[in-house]
Each structure stands twice: as C-alpha cells, then as structure tokens.
Length: 46
Image 1: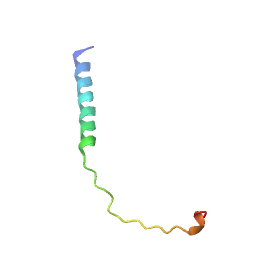
Image 2: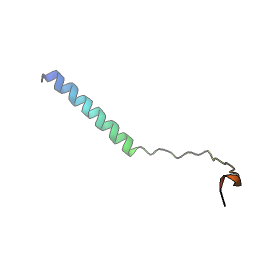
Image 3: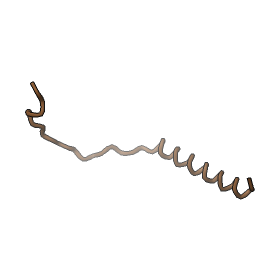
Image 4: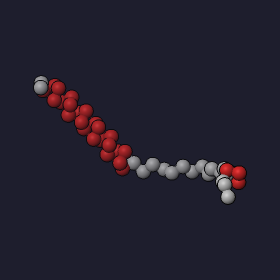
C-alpha cells in the first residue's frame, strides 16, 4: 500500500475509534416528559 493510503486508513480507524469512545462515555439524559395512558379493563381477560 502506498504511504497516502496508509495515512487515510489510519485516520479513518482513529475517527471510528473516537466515535465509539464518545458514544460509550456520553451521558445521555433520560426523557423528562411524563407519559400517562389509561388502559381499559376490556383488554385484560379475567
């Protein structure tokens, strides 16, 4: 492989690794909107 191809491949691998590390360490906030849904008793057999 040529030197330029090796450099481009190294940059791509480093970018993928950096993205994976970012996603593993990102503290995603939990949804803050409260959801309320009323279920009818007809849906649950007794």
